[in-house]
Length: 286
Image (cartoon, rainbow, N blue to C red; front, top):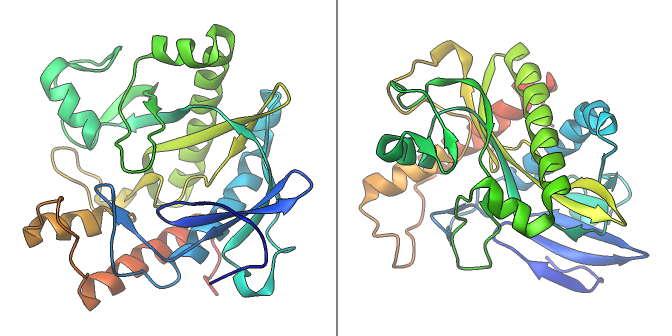
């Protein structure tokens, strides 16, 4: 796919184009990444799910953003080139902040690994006795670095956020992140989904904080069916954990080029992404 616009960047799953006048065109592909590798097998319709779900969430979260004097970067998902309709967003160009703002309401993944060793996630001390899938007493802010291509995101403590953006802005980001997560978790719960954790990315427009990138998609969040949630084991999910699990069982060493995904894994992953969209939004995925 090529567009008659200057290419600004090509990430693991999306291309970013200069749309002029302080705007960018974000185009989500069907590529899927895992363990810092882009897999050779695409997931059909994945880019459309990521885009359309983000558009829906931006609308849902506008009241929370407004309470914090913030906004989001979406201009339009309709005023885009026909060739990328459904998978592209026209957005405001921002000065992105150098941290990923992660909110956790449940213990899972790398959080479980660190908690099992230290009883905390960096400087966030958690109560004893938690297991994989446990609900936390209250949501916590566990930020990470925003890695360059080929590098890993690394969990950081709050003082590192202060060093990166200043004390006042760091506190603002923490409060805003937790407020967005809490509202999103409430909406998801009403749709029968547990929002275990998610990450947000923010930028600046002048001095104003703006929510950017994608939001609350299966690529950036852990979504679990409420009906099957049971602490003590890895939870069934509506995200790419299914692909990660298959890659682990395949014997891939995470260093050599990743293997092709079997057709059944592709189909099951696509189904999970679409289920997340339909269950959250209450809309059929067209």
